[in-house]
Image 1 (tube, one colour):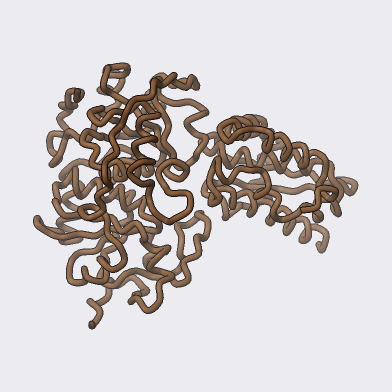
Image 2: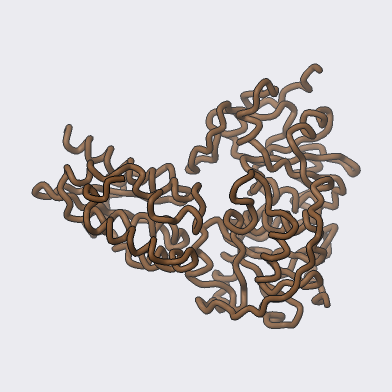
Length: 299
Length: 145
């Protein structure tokens, strides 16, 4: 029971146009059976201050992460969460959020770990919807819980662990953090709280491409040509590449994962969610400081 | 934490939060967020006086005033950051009119005692802990000056 795809001309240039919808498309399809709109923000209370009518909230921290182990929710927790939000396995899910869809992309990536097939982002996210003067409400929808099947989470295709990164040298790595974090001047984004990485710098050979470079001024994704200029021409990615992206805890890099996978069509992209908070505290892993990518470490 | 050293307003706030289930704690935090007073006009034109709370993800600034021995805390944070506004509001309301000694006596782990860890995540609660620590630091600097 999939909703029709958005046929916007801009999207047609992307490898997988079916992964995006415009604000206009969403406004026209709100309330359609089989469509569930999800808001996912950095600020856990932002949804409560006003959201797209009918949208449900999923919080990256309290809903998608396991409260004890540093991992995502398991199969049964995910099934219970989605069922409680009125999402069926065949629902079309459109996710949107604040900050250029930073956390929305993270939620989409977690949905993908569980193989939810039809999950899309709202191009421009929460800010564009509001900037366009579209309706928001503080009314929380009455959700009728549905049955979501317990599906095994598959970490193999789009998630990388530390050992995967160590075995990956020689293949492209993308560091999507700020230049200050990449260079080793600090361990968290400017203006963000310290999260206890003991060392600063980047993984050797990683190219620095801050995640927000993929976003245009209004929070929408840049065009296909603009994105190709960054990731293919400037960074040197080519079709068939095996790519790993990382940031601090895997949220900003899921935005880049979305761009590389769904907009540019790279078929083997993984997000290293351990990211700098793990690598920067791990014992005896190689680290490079400064603006240079550095060499492949000797084994 | 010794409840007897906790100023009454902060103690009430804690009781209010702990009496609620997790979902309603978020609503109460939102109410605090909506109650954060605007910066007094005399500070609105002086952004240089405001200290940024680096522990918070959102841009939040605090400024402390000591008037005839009583402390007043002012804070400003954008409407897009309701959680941070809520934290600031709890402290601004809870500290208002306390003596300097009463502010220093507030336990540093007060933010962790509100039962918000489960509702907003421990990581986010750290933002309020940073805010309280910076408030005390500003107060110490003010007294030393």
